[in-house]
Length: 162
Image (tube, rainbow, N blue to C red):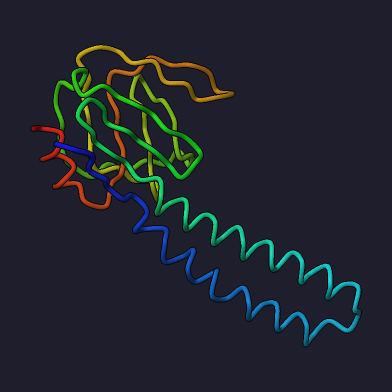
């Protein structure tokens, strides 16, 4: 089967591009409006850093996508996290939009790992055996279900059902 990649950032990428395009305009306006050289220099550094961070985030969202290989489903969000779920542990896969208001890219709610993008998920994976998920400072949790967002839920569901 090989490795298949699935993006998840189509909802947030336009906003990042808008800010990336506006950053040079912001730097120019600050240079024209602020009379003190030392403050202009400090704000220029911050503006350049913010442009670099936005560019880095766009690249990370593009490079680190969800993937399915012959043995695992890899769920990612940039370099923030990466979860490996054995395909053998997947009992069922369904597609459907679910709204959340967790305001976190990853959370565990009642045994469900929620990987939301813009407060939504569109693929649900039920596991036939609990998997341990490490949320860093929020601890290790056992999950029996995973809900996540992908830009192409139809293709993801088809690939997981094979």
